[in-house]
Structure formats: structure tokens, C-alpha cells
Length: 147
Image (tube, rainbow, N blue to C red; front, top):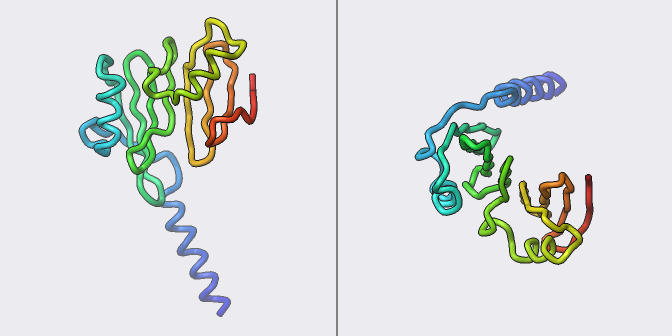
């Protein structure tokens, strides 16, 4: 029994190590999931793609698209976006939920814009142009700040 357990652990470790490490590879934008392609065409059609990469995971792949102006868009394996970061401009308003836009507009953040937005299953997080990060729950209630 002990030998079977050791063999199973070694087999699992071998499989896991195959998927570990930096295995990103270039990918053409037209090879991204259709949902990701539509998102890019809708929100970033005036920009030029510098490169796109696929990052294989144990199950599925994640994707990152970088534009020549250093805008970065990350996608989950299903093609849904997980983060958008702009270096020199605001994230398109069409990407930011209205509740977050209203919070930033009504709060004490004059002349600040959202330069990064991330989302996951449980939270949303934004970074303002002054570097302040604000975290929201699924109902868009503020749950934290970080500067």
C-alpha cells in the first residue's frame, strides 16, 4: 500500500511540474476565445496590439493582451476579462460598473480617474490615477483601501 501511495504522489508531482513554470506562449488575437475578441473590439478598437500571450494552466488557459500604449487586458480561460490596466489614460467607462463610477465621482477623489480595474468571483478592485486602491464586494460596497 505504501508503494502505491508513493507512486501516486510521484505521478501527481510529475504531472504538476509539467504544468508549472513560465510556459507563456505568443498567440494571435484571432485565436483568443470569441468573448475576449468581442471585448477587445468593443472597448479598444482604436488601439494597436503589441502582443498577446496564452498562459496554459492545469485546466484551461489564461490570456493577456498588451497594446502599444502599454494597456494590458487579462482574460480568464472562458474568455471573460479579469483585469484592465491603462498606464496613461482612464479605463474605458464602458468597462467600469456604474456603481463604481458613481462612488469615485461622489467621493473625495477630485480629478482622479480609474487606471486599473480587476474583478474576480467575490470582489472588484480599482486603482485610481493617484495610486489609491479601493476594493468592493459583489454588491459594490467598499470593503477596503490601500495606498
